[in-house]
Image 1 (cartoon, helix red, strand yellow):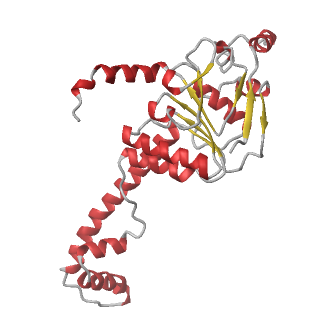
Image 2: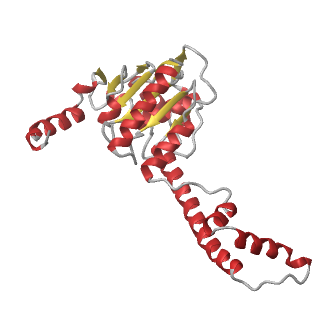
Image 3: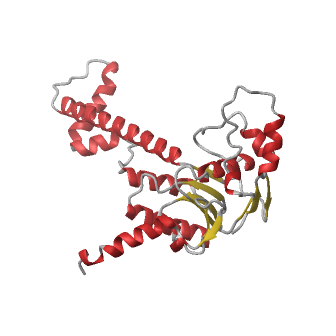
Length: 286
């Protein structure tokens, strides 16, 4: 599915005209001006899956944020939005094949990291509550409680529950909203599974962060299925060899002086991995 067909950025001449007209001199940077244009990139054409490949400083994350800002996509965490971000996006334009669904969003590594921290905080709180309930169970079960007035009714129910239940059953009843504890990788994958719905445009900024090699392959399968069967379009900034191998993906190499479209096996990062393992292939068993 293709919702966003192409996106246009201002060229160096339009950027220069804007900067030259500014009378403000208190700024050290005009970010995001002069980031995308340094690669002579003025337009991106999109497929159901489009990947922006490049190392740190290549501008791939900035490009995603520019697109998300221009389209007004939903996001969970704030980003480094400079004084000139709105000025820049006014100079951008885009074309759609179909209306962009309301569920569309940008997902950044900061979103995933914050989700993992929140989930861990909740689980730690539950663990603390669980310990309190263990002690509560023991106090109630083995107390010599006698009801003396209606004010003791709640305590009576607690004692009766403790005496008629095992410790684990008592705790489970009390922790009605318990949340299963996840590893970091499981938590990160859970975030993508919850946020990516059917029929949406999703911008993913380095989704491989916090994911093991195995979990990256699971995410790869999830994204491929979402694009193929569930009407999703993806624009992904990544240098993960696993995600770069996504079937049918159009890949822009933003490490080049002039951005070029390449097959994933031609990319420098992937070639480095290939040559390393090729040189050590005799060390691997059958």
